[in-house]
Image (cartoon, rainbow, N blue to C red):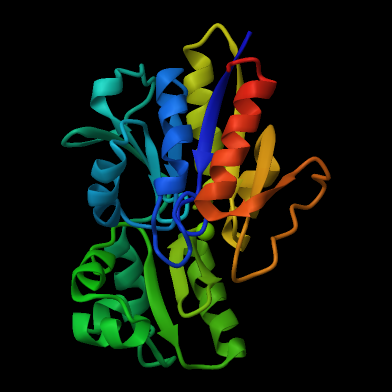
Length: 273
Ligand SMILES: [Mg+2]
């Protein structure tokens, strides 16, 4: 017997790239609930950004925020945890990276050496202009815990110099589309997935099979470490390549439609439905 553990990206995967709707995935989500298969959200979003969405999804399972920076485990799940975790209200939290305040402090001392603007340097209005986010969403995006995005206006050479300066402190810079992100060296969607899988495995007699679903470059690590990697087709970019995984599936449908096709297929292949 094996039991299934699902890890899912949000934007462009469970949520439609354009409308953020998860309606096409609702039936498949319900099937996972029916068969008590955990569906772990693994996203670049923050804890505060996830609150209302988890409510809308009626999501009760663990979730991973800020690109693998921390795993939140709802206390009601009563998973036995054999290590000291942070106690955050309704959740136990396993953090993999530095706190955001540390990232800010570390880069404060470099403000005279390079030209950059971090979220902590700009107002909500400025963020709205930069990203097109609504005021509500910009406010949520600014409430971060483990990563600090910055607008980098210096050269690439300078960026690498700052990288070298930060490395001994266990801090890396990941370049994204609009922002460069300051984050802990070990923050990665794959790491967090593997840690949580080990936790489930430690209290199950059954072998765990992991299924990961994602559409973007930042999902590649998670996809390549999963037993069943599923690349969700995107309406706006080519599917990312998962190195050394010719067995990775590419869905026919886009976003939540593809998501739901993949879940249904795995449930039937595993003999669950
Ligand atoms: Mg995505």
